[in-house]
Length: 392
Image (cartoon, rainbow, N blue to C red; front, side):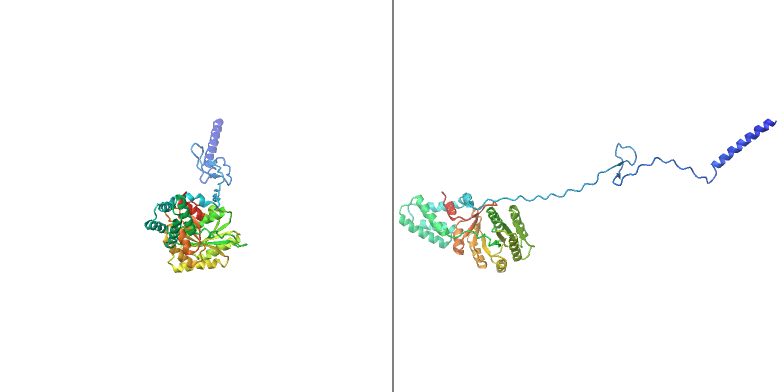
């Protein structure tokens, strides 16, 4: 009996222990066990960035190290290539064929008329008409015809070579090869020579200015350009482009600004840079506008406060004929023109304009434009001109 009671006691004690343990484990207010955390990932460096995992990468939130950002390269400024123009000497000889193509009709016609067996009044009238049609002018034509009639009577019979020689002599006499056609572009000590370029709109004035700069640089001179045509921004842009091609600085002002101020600044730049020549391109002026002509005189006076104006070149379109003569006369009244640049002489121009414009103004043709190319501006050579007209 005692053994039976002992077993009961043992069982009861075990049961109480089990019930007590369960009560302690599930009692209200008991704290939940801490969660089991995965291993901590290593910290990323500051320059590393997190990106989504790419296809084929394992794990969520995969990381990669990106290279530091690359600064964009500075834009490369390509300096325009500086051209080396050919010298001015011999240009008209090289361009003679262009003159011959455009002017030889006059020469052939005159030679054919003068070579006839019988030169009556009708033939002389035709000769006179040919010269006037070529824009030689009435007075020079009459002088040429009168002298030819006298010489033909003295000669009697005439060969082709004799007729050509007579005509060449008379045309040269009217063009006057003894006129000084030298461009005055030599500096005065530390002061540069100044060339003022004037003319009516559409004559090729700005282009002539750029070509003249090329010619002078080809002769070894240093040049500064003044874009005093402030009424047309395109004119200043065009002149600057001409200058950049040959390494010449261009002084320009605001659109609509004072042309005299730009001209003054250009001369000041020329003195500062110790250049040989300053070429000032003025606005193309309608010769009927008195106010604009007065302004042209002002430009010249303002320049003369700083330096001497050595040349005033009047640019004329040779194809305008006698209308160009009227323009020339008005400009001559506004400024003291020292020389003429005839443009487009290689085209449909009537070469007699060379004779008439010199006779009316008393100043020589110094430059002629014989094409559209940058180096087609040439110093005028009377003998080459006449020979091109008459042909070989």
